[in-house]
Image 1 (cartoon, one colour):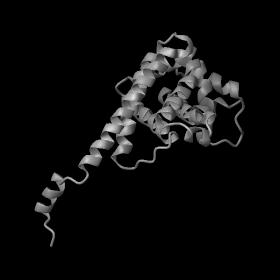
Image 2 (spheres, one colour):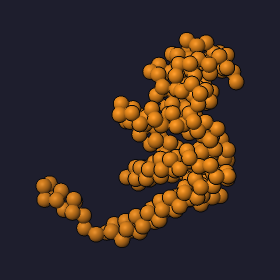
Image 3 (cartoon, one colour):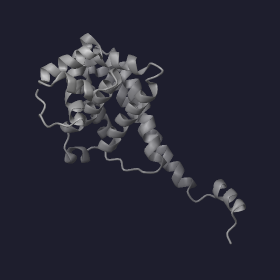
Image 4 (cartoon, one colour):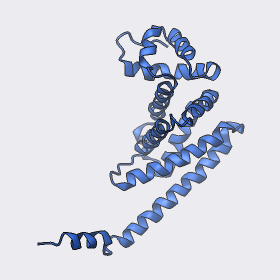
Amino acid sequence: MTIAADATLDEIRLALAPLIAANAAFDGWTAEARDFAADQAGLDRDIARLAYDGGAVPMIDAWFASIDAAMMEGFTREALAAMKVRERIQALVEARLALLHPNRDALRRALAILALPQNAPRGLGMGWRSADAVWRGAGDTATDYNHYTKRAILGTVYAATITVFLDDESEDYAETRGFLARRIAGIMRFEKAKSAFLERTQNLPSLSRFIGRLRYPVA
């Protein structure tokens, strides 16, 4: 793989990250892994160092971002549109797992780094971004509180699925796929129940509106 001479730092981060991940399985998320990846890509090591200023966490962040982007490459808009929402989410998450599979050892090392207290907020942000990428890929356009609840729940499911995935030695990671399918079914049941509840209660008096009128009566 070569990187264009006029590539921006953002483009370099995304392009180089998968190579760093491949090296991180042996060298960890270190300067050595970054420099070796730069050599493989024909990139000046100083430029690679500048692209990942901050050490391991920026490298991991870029790798996860590259997975977010690559996840969609195996699907056409028409193919996703032909699926049910549950099937879209399942297919997209499985696509992510397939991309991660060759570098599971690097993933283990990455998660250990992100679990450190000083890195936990950044790690949560990466998880949120991945959940958002899946929902957007599945066609979700919610902008109200549903936007947040969907991503929070999927983020939790995805984190649990990764835990199973890391130790899954079954053929074609069948155990992980089954675990994921059951958890996604749970998400869909929750969304259905939530929608039904909102439909039943949308015309009921709102306590918050009532209190607001007491404080700010209509003139």
